[in-house]
Length: 272
Ligand code: SF4
Ligand code: SF4
Ligand code: SF4
Image 1: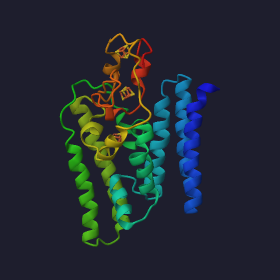
Image 2: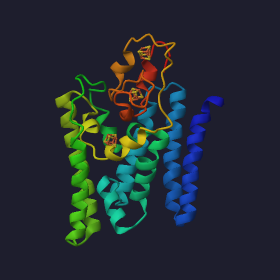
Image 3: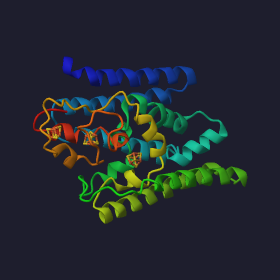
Image 4: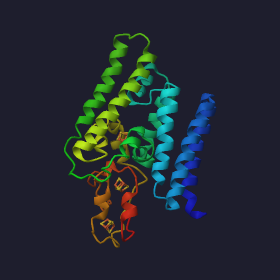
């Protein structure tokens, strides 16, 4: 049973958040929401422990579909970055704001870019594409993310400055259009650059929050140097080009690790 300590711990953390928000906000939705996510994550980790090949994908599909379909399309919560700005400007500390605070701003201090590996509904689709391992070297295009970040902020700010009518409806439409755009750009880039995660590396505005916080992540892959034979296999299979054999926080692309564990699975010496 000892090996199931990590999934149990994750479940406890999420249940604590679920109960705390349920009681403080007097809203049963939070109990359901965070319990569901906690159970999905715990299930994924347990499946991984049992060496099920698609363990991460199970969690990614369970959480990603829930966020996209139930929260986004059915409950009309704009869970994209525009939704975060919108609720922040209106001073409402509700689903999208809480989601950002937990998953993308403070959560990465604990679990790094785990969101990107196990929950994001954009990557959930991109991970079905054929270039799981990048076929070309990484490009120096990361600056684009700052432009998309500023554009998202400017879009929502403009709605407030011009007192746009029916903002709730605009936010819902922007969620639908924004997602379609993300998928179209993400798929096109993946095929052009032969890299499923090209969108994550160069375009995604959320990484402006995720990267600096995940630098300090408590949860990270470490390399046992005494076992490593420098075969390079881990680097080859990494979808995010992380130099995982370097244990320093400043390692190449260290803030890009999505904790997918592909390197761990492929290491012939069990050094990771
Ligand atoms: S980088 Fe952006 S698109 Fe990629 S998985 Fe993370 S949040 Fe999703
Ligand atoms: S796959 Fe394992 S042995 Fe090979 S370089 Fe990576 S950590 Fe070292
Ligand atoms: S392969 Fe390893 S280093 Fe690369 S993203 Fe996945 S867990 Fe991180």
